[in-house]
Length: 379
Image (cartoon, rainbow, N blue to C red; front, side, top):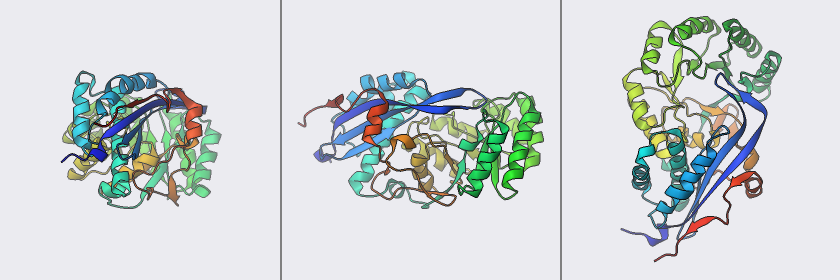
């Protein structure tokens, strides 16, 4: 039955660009900015939902254009309660572009806004609306471990994160040309933070299968929780082979752009820990689906980046083990992620609870503004 109060009557798109200083580096690239394509949807009752994706400095204009020119006009006068149905309709509208990171990120911004609106409409925190399996999840700190950090800085920041920052899990980037340098960096951090701190490493797709086997065997000496993306993300045969020749848990999934890709990854036995990225997989709808697929295979999940939003997904499902901490959005938020010791906690307000600072958004906006809003009058 139609509920005219739930019809979408306004849709706003904007793109913000946040400088990153100093630049962050991994085995693929260094980047000096983050982009957030942001969507705000308004229903006929005046309720609002906000959604967003991200890029690491490029591609945001293409995402914004796709939202502005194709997707947002198509959501007007649609029933905001039909989240899954509406997202299916929008995906079909741009079927020739899917799956892919640009289309998935654009769709994610709308999907997240719809789910935020659903929580606001229900007067319920979104993590509870989606399942409410728990009210907290462990955080691991990646920000200390960028590959371009000098060794002394890496060790000092890692030590500070544990001793003063309350973190009990850290992730270090690896993928230096010389494996001895990778091992030295990991060894020095392990020595600084002690044997009880959880350490992971992330190679960001740097290695061939033979190189990965050799280097992972070297890294196994440092009591690591997982090795993340040692191979090209789509090399599922390689990941399966890796599991036969090395002992470290294989983590990945941030570079998979569909639920079907996660299904195939699980079917092939390619990963031990799955890391859906809410933006890259197309939003909360698909991230939750990927988590449930993993649960059916008795596999844990650790949603990738955007901790303010990922904690909502992680707390909705029963198989989450971690959420990743990188402070990439705090400069445009009214408040940071909720923490209690080493745990992230979801916001308890209706919806996802993420509150953007309007002045900060205006300062960093490069495309779109509140005055550029698609609207139609109610019938």
